[in-house]
Amino acid sequence: MDCQKASILMMEYIDGTINESDKISLLGHIEECEDCNEEFSLLVESIDLVENMEELEPPEDMENLVMSSIDLNRYSIKTKVWNITLALFATITIMMGTTAYVAYSKLGFLKEVFIALTIKVVNFIVLNLPQLMSFIDGNLLLVFILGMGILSILMGSTITIAVAEVYIIKKFGLKLRRG
Amino acid sequence: MNEQDIDIVKRCLEGDGNSFEILVTKYKKKIYNIAYRFTGNKDDAMDVTQEVFIKAYNSLNQYDPKYKFSSWILKITTNYCLDQKKRKKVETVELNTELDNRSTTTSAENLYIHKENKAAIAKAIASLPDKYRVLIVLYHNQNLSYNEISETLKLPLTKVKNRLYRGRKMLKEELENVRREETKWTAKKLRY
Image 1: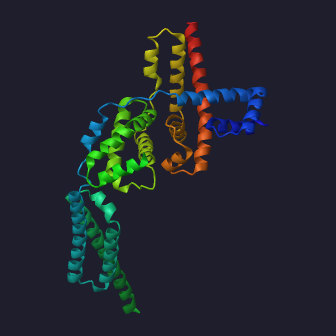
Image 2: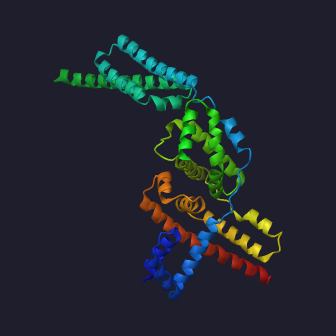
């Protein structure tokens, strides 16, 4: 047996998965090879020390510490209903905002872009409702900030596109007139 | 046993938050000891244990009953420990300090040697890179199986096995180093 094979068998020996014939040849090799002998005894000793390392007792008031830091009503029906209401409120806010924007906007050709974006966002909210609920976690301010954040991203991106398009058309239009 | 864990989780999710205490009692020792092997001191280990339970409770609705609850909470523990270490970049405290203090009070030689060994192995574990240390602690100290570790750390079985093999070799080498240093130190001390 070579030392490399012996090294693998040592691991199987420690795992307790080594078969009888391998065990005999491993122990035979160890008796002959000084390096492997040293490696084996140190390895077994290290593992033995780790396995018999003293287990510490956690502080007795651990339960109290944990239980006093968690919200015991987190998963109560009341909280769930509250979270669903808030998530729906966020969705409705975005939808109403969109409707108002679309109704009063003069940039007709960009309405479609805006509607498409909104559909994507609302779709995301509906699909990820459970995760969103646990993220929102009853926090009204968070819903407000999230709702406003999404709305301003939607409006911001639309306005940017609008300005860019107007600018491009203007330039393009000037060139056409000259020609 | 595991069915019970799932039942408790279900009860918590149905609104009975107090049931969570049963899970705290059941897993606090395991988590505390793993945390101690990572942080190196009892106060930090206690903070980590508390944080892990709070995190687990707050994400209980994301627990997938397909896996063992123990694997899930140990995953939170190891992730949290590794994360904290990265964030704080705290040097692991040498675990032998308090053992050394106690060992001076006894004169029985074999007891002394025993304690010296314990201190040396703790030091050797502390100096292992995280990815090997986590495996050594989970497999050899917390008696998790290859499958449980693979599930906990989301690592393929072959990787678990390879890393553990390598970790053992490194541990052996670290132990050799620690002892060599200690012999040098004792020899120096004797000379003066």
